[in-house]
Length: 153
Image 1 (tube, rainbow, N blue to C red):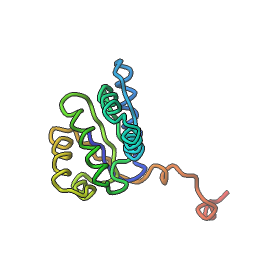
Image 2 (image 1 turned 45 degrees about the horizontal axis):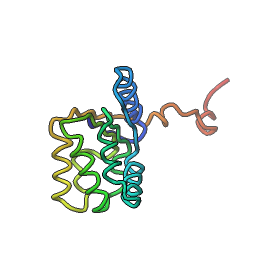
Image 3 (image 1 turned 90 degrees about the horizontal axis):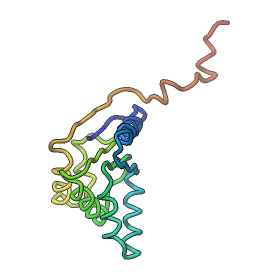
């Protein structure tokens, strides 16, 4: 599942709700923000336990990745992400939430061939949810002093 939309519209909430629903069905679920997931993988490589870490990651029934596309990826991060996505492809669940529209995801990768390999596995056959609208943080925020100057008592 690929969930996209502007900041504050509920992508992370929906991703978490999906995870909760999967847990209620006794599935093993892991939630990570992409920068933290890749950072954890980088540390595993440095400590010589990359394959063990990758194997452990592949055992989760559902992997939820939030904050996809906040920054462009390095070549090493792209290669690591390919391994993660490829291990899950047609084997385990994967859901991603991103502010970046899917048609701009290629630009996040330094190598177009690697980008195509990753995105081909992610996009084709995925359920796509696009959440439009204004940030709920704006909509639900309290009125400011300036906003209340025209309110009559």
